[in-house]
Length: 278
Image (tube, rainbow, N blue to C red; front, side, top):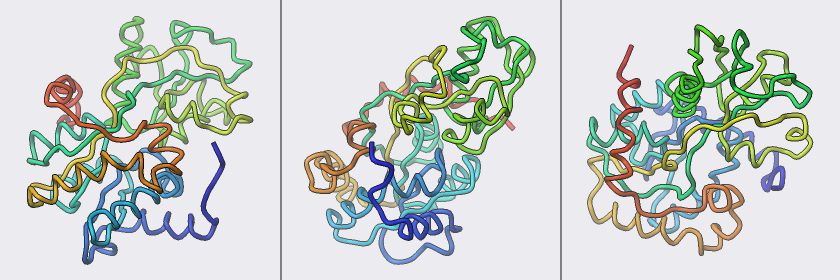
């Protein structure tokens, strides 16, 4: 995948805009909240084509915003500060069941975590992580919960048998072993598949987690049903649009958008409970 399809100044501007507080971004049009699973600059790069497409398809401005962390993003979602939300599957289930958000679509890939170590590390399997340090972002993230669950299946308790080192984002966590900050890392399979080749050659995968449905787009309860349906149709058609055909991440990596079922969402209930814990 190309390193960038946008001028550096535009990436920087979008990164600033994405990181700005909600009050600084609110205005006419729709506010689209994007989960901060990667850095603001990377988030801007991944989603700028989708933003332009939705603005045209819905006939009104769409402003992309994010939050400093998962906790703040979830709180802003609960307060109704976003008209649309693009979020992790378990956070989507919480927004649906607790806050009344309407399901719109999901990305068609599966979310899965990968355990990574430096290429020359002596660690070969998960059991070798006993007494070691593992870097994972955001204790409320689905990748954290999947990684913790996988370690448990291998007889390892995170925070007891394996030390946890926190990273701010999943792409930052991925390179923790290369920086000497951890012995291993848990990051997303999609991110792992699409990092720069020269960085990928420095890392090695030792295991994977279970899979859960992809990211979910939801609409605020206040959004009219007709607008929700228009949005649903627009996302389904994104893959064949001029912007979608050039989208190297949401289309090629996330495999575009499709319908999301109640059965898919219900399987996420075990991962919602940790979100409600202090």
